Image (cartoon, rainbow, N blue to C red; front, side, top):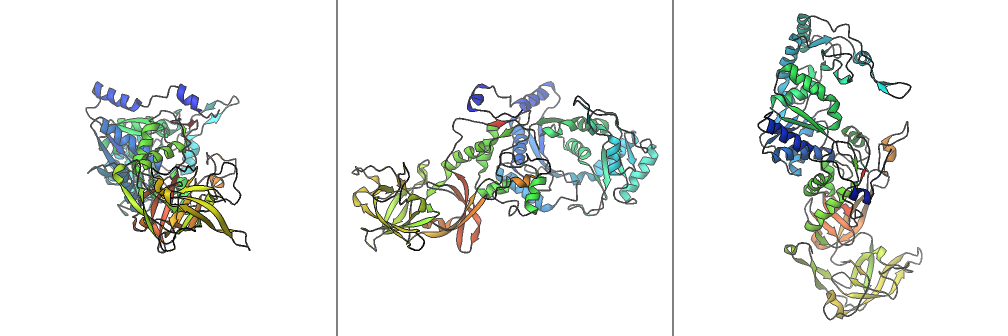
Length: 584
């Protein structure tokens, strides 16, 4: 049954231990199983990293650091159909941005092909592997599937031996060598481990170790036409690198017996696999398969679209590596899958940006404000604080003149209850400037649209000085019409309109849950002149609006700013909100 944790639940329920990996490693060191710690992060270069990978990166590197060990970066590149060097470069860039360094420990499974081949030969000689002529579909049928009885209890009836399972060692050695030499068509033969076709774990029912694929590899070209399967390659690559602790997500728990079988039967370094729960976040999908579909079908502009949960997308959105690492430390490492509310991630981001982002004023939907008692050509420079959270950030000068841009929403001809901004007869403070009182407005008679607001200012109220005894309930931001620069603003919302995009009815698609209003582009915005000289990834708080980041793109001659996150934080006192759900 699905439940949502309330504030009381989070305060009163003892959380699951998040230190079980540390405890296991410490016990291994104490018992003498290992005398050091060596982990690895092993991405497949078939897509860009997303925030789920950030959790795995954090676990792999932090556990090694905690015990004075090392971490390798190894690309598990044994599937030439989907892998590419551009993905390798993107992955390395993202890991470094996140704040982790593998130094000179960069490896590729494709460099181990000869080593893996020799281990496969070793298994054949031991009578633990055989060449099979069954097709992929026939292997699936022979293996069998889990079935439920009338009481809905799942059973796994024994599979069926392949008719080729009892080939002699010599015949298997000959056929495997000829597979490598390219004598057989693609898909016509495989090399399978000889384990147990009646094993209750379907993974252990003679898994495929090698298949024939005449596809050039992005690193080794056409040197090989047989490629090792992940379940064979991965534990043996760990062993070759002397990895003590293979830390991986929970879906690999069922594969652990096979991981251990290959290590034991190949008689190599005994790496240990430990599983932890993967990251699931509301309002997004964390699967490279689905993310690739979003890219290929043009629902987003690319892997680095700011609506994507990829590290590149989050970076372009204005996320900081510090906020992501803080988020990872708060959610901890669990043994069971759960879903974390994206609001916690946004809360971590706001806390970080509040400290580091300078404040500026920008008007997204401009309405002209005319100060009728201000001289036509007079310009004053007002002092504005760059960041109240960081005194070292100093201050800047902002120009104040007769005509200003204000937000259209900051004026109402007929105000609703408790509206404290501008309306006829009401007074507000202009941020860093003066108190003004609305005296009237101009309206287009044809459309009824307000075209300008008129007011007068009180010269004794500059900047809220000590002599200012007037009290007003509203403060609004502004930019000088004469000095403001035009900017393009991209307002990003969640890519999915529902919390659980993958929860769809039979026949439905997660694409049905796409939010059609996830992006609004505003090309008529204005900002302070200082925004003209900003650099990509420079972050700001647009006062009273939210946090924004300078995008690498330019809209013609205008700088572009992406909305990172709004100012309001509804997280309140809830540190973590979890709803029970299995991983995708």
